[in-house]
Image (cartoon, rainbow, N blue to C red):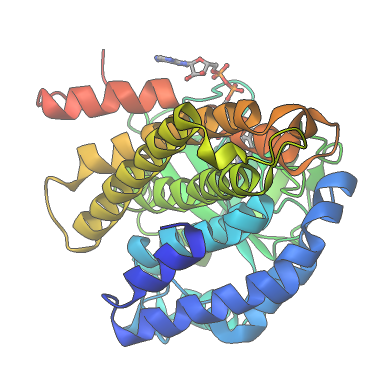
Length: 399
Ligand SMILES: Cc1cc2nc3c(=O)[nH]c(=O)nc-3n(C[C@H](O)[C@H](O)[C@H](O)COP(=O)(O)OP(=O)(O)OC[C@H]3O[C@@H](n4cnc5c(N)ncnc54)[C@H](O)[C@@H]3O)c2cc1C
């Protein structure tokens, strides 16, 4: 019923390989991620130990297709991996999730050269990547970048612009960056994705990340000043970016985030359950677990999480199966999970009384972490609109 039990039960239905992947993630979460979670939050430190342990356990290529040498897992597996990690440390879930999303984007149309230089090291656990889409000017409209890509010779591009909130910023070995054509004669809105290596000249990082929550993310600003990038690092064709956004980035990203925030909701629910069982009053000796209205509230919270989890797994499985109707479920999922996580932590704070309200309590951290769910793009409001537009047969971006 609760996180660990439910994960065990669901595993019975998994293909053997996914079951063993999730077991590995559970071990790393218990042995490495959980012991470091508090210091990651308190010191806003990037979750190095957890990320390296996941890479060393052979999970770096989780979302790289089997035919390219990876573990060949899709968004269903990514959701569950992030959920397990997110139960102990949402920052680790997000940082590893962003690496997996970046890996999926790199894999989607990888050339043999990109396979050699990026995917093989990713599979070997020697290379960390991430996504860098957001910009100051366009904010939550992350699908319309202003960062410019200009062909300066037959084999080189120059990239200029600025990105914000780059999770894994400064720690990743490469950055998957969205750009727009600098050429004034290029078709309007010709967007492209390109990989930029961390050692490229012309990269400079902003202030260290000091978030309210998700404090280990290292989500920093990045300036790209005349950065020279080989043409061989272009992903797909020039102008392919919208394809990447809706076919790869959004589904993988939404499911990774949904997993991470469901992990937060699960952790909060477990805190509530434990509190109700353990809290006894000295006058009567009775526990809170005997109070009917609290039983009712706990049951309602459990159902909220469980129906959100079912929608999430359904969306991920439909997307992985190539179901043409998967998109509204994929969009709706992260909005539902965001509401579930924020409401859950809020309600659990009430159920667990004054102790939870202490500075530095676990719920204090969960509340801060959960709050990012609504504003991480695609944001809750945009996802609601996209779901509605898809159902109405309207183009997702329009008007
Ligand atoms: C912890 C954290 C980690 C992040 N990591 C990454 C990362 O790794 N990579 C990356 O690229 N970005 C990342 N981001 C950035 C994030 O994805 C968003 O782009 C950013 O938070 C939103 O931009 P903004 O602050 O300018 O919001 P605004 O664009 O100012 O939006 C404010 C509000 O207006 C709403 N809004 C805007 N337009 C519409 C509309 N048309 N209809 C309805 N509502 C609308 C939004 O939903 C939002 O609630 C991260 C952000 C956070 C907080």
